[in-house]
Image 1: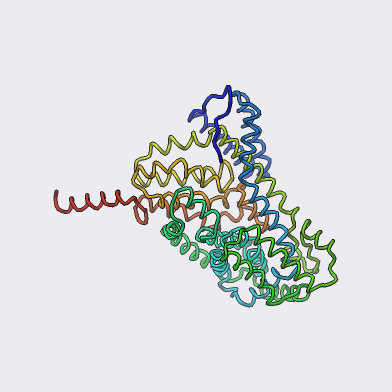
Image 2: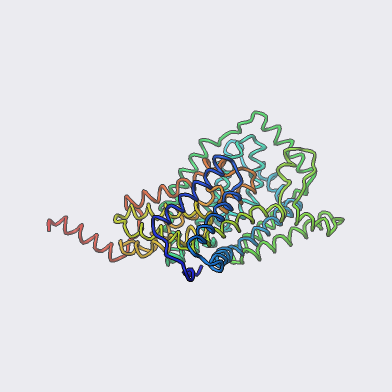
Length: 481
């Protein structure tokens, strides 16, 4: 995003002013969503209006305001289109029997005794192969969520395991756009960045797995077996359950391996699912397919729980997510245009001395951008720009910064109720962000282990000259010099 100063009568923003604006935003959005239970869109829209009012009172031109909005939204055009395609994908995957088949096979393959940790592992493994948390949540995640609720598990716990596994896969895959972004912003080599991520990612993964074993072993509902059998009978009776349903997933993995862009991959899978629908039900009309893509799949099995799980998808279902993305990107564009975020972050970065405090501040900045703006990419870009020189001045390698950008930026967006990723996950699985947040262990633990690394120095990558200096100092101390 190109940064330009506003025109004419604009005066630069002072640190105290920027902090005051950000705190006011936090209060408005926090109270609106958490205290009053509002949809995030209204508080965000109110904040946008107040920021525009503030900018006008300080002499900003409407051209500057419009320019900030345009620059902000431009960064989200591709994600918006991807969300629209995912809405279409969900509906045709259900109609083609792909998601129902995943559920049936999953009931036979995954033990109820170890269900929740199994969900976490499956989403993590496949997510690493695909490199897209959104894709995992909206395909395999829906199937696993249906299984978990049928077995009687807490929906918020199952959603937390799905989202945590998907985030792990997104974070550790070389195919992930967010992983590539963090590496590019910090100017670190991609595979070295992924390797260095493991110092915080593996501990967070293992502790999360242990917690899912403790909380998610054994179905909580004594009637789970009867529900499973009833669900299996319903799925087998109303959908085409076949091993061929795995073909779109295989195609998706192949596309990921061949580095086919997300838009092309989704279009291929939508087309393949439509072909499968016509093969299974040749009498299907084009108008019904079009309605399904636009409005979503409507399940009419007569089983209330199955119908509730599988009535979803469609372009229209994604419009609330798209609306929030546009609003949050608008807010982010305005904050960038008028240098509010930059003014608050840069002085902080310059005042930090120790490696631990620097890492902590960078992570908190990423979390702050997620909270104030709600946009995942900006939570990586802004702290990356603000802290890069300071990290190097303190003798820390670019790899140290790129890991921090992931741990404080990428994974946190799923925990912010008005965050783009959180809204998508909540709408897709039908569980509110505040409900699944306590069980999204991987996102909660990643920044903690990253901060511990900063203070202990374990896994904290330093510049070669800095490492040499530290080694020389240690040798001299041992020799008594």
